[in-house]
Amino acid sequence: MDYLLAIDQGTTSSRAVVFDRAGQPVAIAQREFKQHFPQPGWVEHDATEIWLTQLAVLREVLQGAGISARQVRAIGLTNQRETTVLWDRRTGEPVAPAIVWQDRRTAPRCDALRAQGAHRILARKTGLVLDAYFSGTKLEWLLDHVPGARERAERGELAFGTIDSWLLWKLTGGRVHATDPSNASRTLLFNVHTQAWDDSLLTLLRIPRSVLPQVLPSCGVMAETDADILGVALPVTGCAGDQQAALFGQACFTPGMAKNTYGTGCFMLMNTGDTPVTSRNQLLTTVAWQGPAGAPEPRTAYALEGSVFMAGATVQWLRDGLQIIHSANEVEALAASVPDTGDVYLVPAFAGLGTPDWDGQARGTLVGMTRGTTRAHLARAALEAIAWQSADVFGAMVRDSGLALTELRVDGGASLNNLLMQIQANVLGVPVVRSRVTETTALGAAYLAGLATGFWSGADEIAAQWSEDRCFEPQWSEAQREAGMARWREAVDRSRRWARA
Image (cartoon, rainbow, N blue to C red; front, side, top):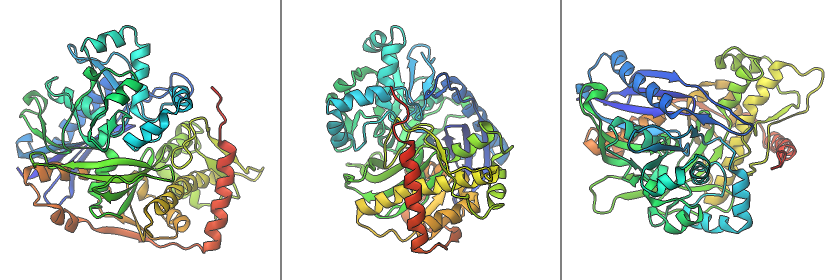
């Protein structure tokens, strides 16, 4: 059994990766699935389609690697976080479309809770800001709007989960309803200090405890798959939300180490050790991982996190919405064909603004256009928007931690865009270091699974496997950075509070 199998279920595609003992990807399989936008601000997925695409890539990747499931030691699972699924325990079928983390339908409910002062208790117990981003108000909405759902939930007939729980349920034929602390800590229902579901939060959001999954350590045996899935039963021994998994995959095991993942969104996390740090700058306090299972007191690592909702999805919008590019790969060359944006700024607040603004009513804004503005300027403005949003988060992290972060480790699909990475180094003023293995989200899930089974001996062995692909050194002066940031913040201000309930 010389391989680990990682499930990497993302916002726009389901992926599977086979890793060898050196932490190198042997084969990758990926399938996109449909995004649904039934109303302005609403984003939905078909949870059944997610399961079917994930099942397909699991089988494909083993074929691509030229191995059988019997050669796999264990499975690690990582997932898009906050996306909310509610399903029938008897049939295993969703009772409604999954509400995606980007969905803003519960923003008015968050505003009402904030007016009641509920944001204070939520911040104190969960480490999160009160925002429609998180699962709690999405679940409350489903219970209130799906006919009969609340009554059925109270009778114990329905199950709630983020995508990890949904996949564990399907992988085990409904035998296991579980999650891990990193995913649980994104629900507004989980107390990060007691490491348990919190009754006062359940009461606040009117959630019956019977719908909740069991919380198990991120590193340890969580489940065993049905043999029918891959021909042999395999243990699932690692689980973490995608951004926490990427932090683990980047070997950020020491407090103060930080990474940024460029996927559909952009997520920067910094390891803060075994103590949850309360943010003064609108960052999130989150569980990074917990494990190993079976220890007398499984160790919990915490992180500070900043969330940018639109990163790679901004490039998708250029492709699918504006149709100024045919594929995402074209954006780098197009953006590089002009030396700058011509003072054009794109604020991609299509799903509101995340860290540090947390404005659910902000909307996408494009400013500074003239008759001379071309699609190349828009492409470059899109890349710069990703970098500027990340710089906002980076600054908040430095202020909260009191640490002068000396580099930023990066991963994710958009980290392969050299122009974007150079822009990122310019606006941050510190080196941006891309790891040799860019599949760090899947790798983190594999590492967690492998540590639980003895596939790897410990964190030191994993850290020794990390290697640099390329380092991007900043080329801007401090004056250029300050002027650019000031102009960016002017553009952000113009996007604020645009949508009115």
